[in-house]
Length: 85
Image 1 (tube, rainbow, N blue to C red):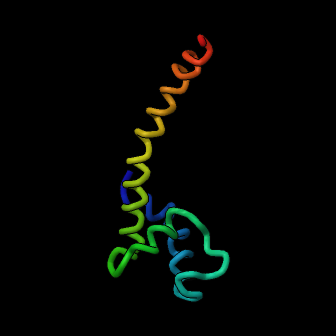
Image 2 (tube, rainbow, N blue to C red):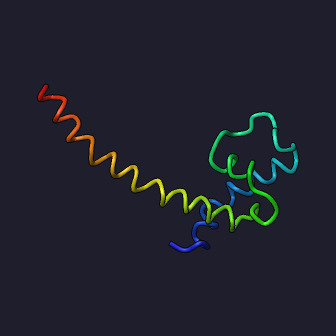
């Protein structure tokens, strides 16, 4: 997956967050509580571009995948062990 595809896919969502923050300020009413908002709270200067935010989201996505799959693989053995008790 390349960055252009990621930006094309989630760019409009990121841009909406940036536009609302510019229009209403950093703590606007009904501000969503999501990853993009969290990243924007800590991002400064060049870290607030669509490209940079897309890379950060992609990195977090890839970091979360192994954790999810590890847990998913452990569930059957945990259920099996629990059933034997």
